[in-house]
Image (cartoon, protein in one colour):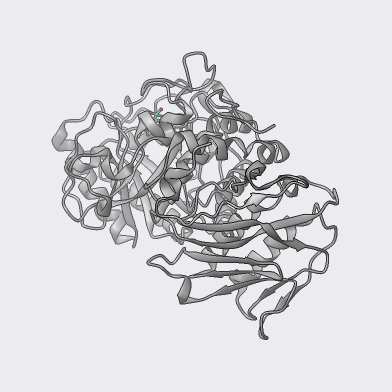
Length: 519
Ligand code: TNX
């Protein structure tokens, strides 16, 4: 295993695991299988902290966010140590045999998601720059615990953790995943499971593609037929589905508790057949098209000349914005095939104004760069061949289709998925540097990275998991870890060590032969 390169910029003490009777030069280095790799790691396997039934979890009183993190941590050690741990107020000095969670600006290091994790033989201390930082420290600790903590049901065994110190912070503030719930609908249970998996790899954004030609997936009170009719089907003619406002609000809260921000998207002016089919008055010719269950793109458009189109958009943006605490609203804007450039530009500029009026920051796929953008508008880059020169202050989210579209096939024999951007095997999704992807777009202009999963060919959670795992873990590292020292040949070993965890969690992963799976 090659580890040299990762030691650049990190302090990594490989301490021998002293198997009984073995001399110094017969010992084997142990390295923690952390994904994403932290900014700085110094661990020693020669001394350990044992988590027992008596180990308490301590948090300062009155911090609801931290109490939730403490509960989640408590649940994590459950399979090994039956019964709930004591969660107690940490107003006193650091106690022995405790895992203490706290917030302090000292863990900041230029990121309010940073944390400092210290494991001593007497206890653990996680100091975050914010509750999110503490949460990420807990996710790191989770990966240092034996994989069997991921099992459900009590299976008593010892939990021992190597002692040491990890100082960590993310490279990018936007570490996203996108789920297309329009081509096939995924209910709240599936979305929550995806949120759980994302959170464990330190993602902090989930972009929901809530409408497309094949389905409208969110209740809008002023336009009830959108879901009553527009939500009733899916690609291939399935029965579709939609989120009530309550479902959506619950998802937002569930995600927030895991430090993930939900970003809603209503794709326009194309990808809008489900809405056109639901309301005759939205069509230029006054005739509603049939619901669509195929997988073509770019054939439907809003009627740009009718004022009711903008009234409709205003209502939709207003209602979704009212139940979205995040400051973002994604307007799509991709794959428009039948409008003139000028029609497109004027439409995007007008809709941008509507989003800003409702207090949100617009986001759009990279085609929106052809319009005059407001300073707060974010461009989401996706087309591998697009050459875009964004205005100097404009921020970008990078979703290069030929790298991190998780609906692309792994190789030519992959049954699921599409391949219009090529086959994307696991190393392809990992081996790239956001800072050098686009000429003229420096790291400072990049908000972060987001991995979309389009669902034309993906009908079930098993399908989604098969396409997301293992690539999603690679994307997590692209978005979180320092570029310096990132190398596939080393990563594949840490990635391979995730296998027993994924199996314990019941993840339907694709066991790519490019990875050394630990089984
Ligand atoms: C392109 S990505 C699209 C989607 C498709 C996807 C399939 C983007 C902004 N538009 O409508 O679902 O390809 O990979």
